[in-house]
Image (cartoon, rainbow, N blue to C red; front, side):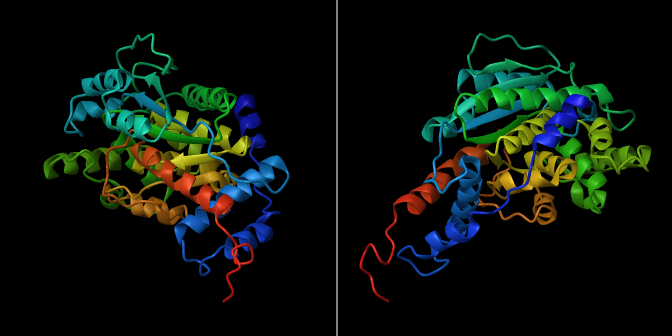
Length: 355
């Protein structure tokens, strides 16, 4: 726990000491106040993070943006809670490494680096790809409907290792890091975690995920309810909730998000599952919220609730529900656009525009 404590202690809130000047800079651009909508909010957040990091008023940069996709299997998947068999987790990791997935296309289109991490796929994956990292906590989690998904030691190790992997990427010059996931059954895990950490009933937290039918949805809801009944009284601790309900990839993301916040770097949050990881991170260390950018509104029905809990407004709404960090990759051009107008757009005075 000492390693986790050091990670938690390193996360400090933004002071917003530069915020007044940042707002003045944005408002003095050649536009009506607020005319660029969420881009102004995004630029302001980016500026507060980067100015405080450097200790002075600076221009905005998006340097070496990176997305880490964490992959793991889930014991609850044996109950058929997905349209796909569990073997698809491993198959999709190979697809990522071969460059054939949506996230590969979007990263390539937007000049984003991609890292793929095996956190606990059932069958160990071997690859000599520079984009591949092994950080296995086991051959998938256990079935959370009947027993804890993992041990407390595995939770702590997964968070610590997720942080270590993020620190390694940040040391290469990355100042914007996004996260994605792959794991058959992980919407069940995320739905259960959400229900345990909020007042949301199971019939609202559990959705169709990959597109299951209504019979499968009923089974999925029953399994989550069974798990919540099993851990009744243990939901006050986010770490215990994570231990009981999984998964390895979610725990890795929590650690990686904490690491980014501790280094005062922007965190790009993808859809439903990544947003639940963000919720866990915020429950553990509320200050991490200052550094989070929520990239898109997932079509998974409970995602809107997570956004409400986190007081977040996603940048995009494309009705996506794929995961993989795809929303993060698509949001990168918006960060670049926000930086560009903040840095280069004329002021009324410089453009000699008189209202």
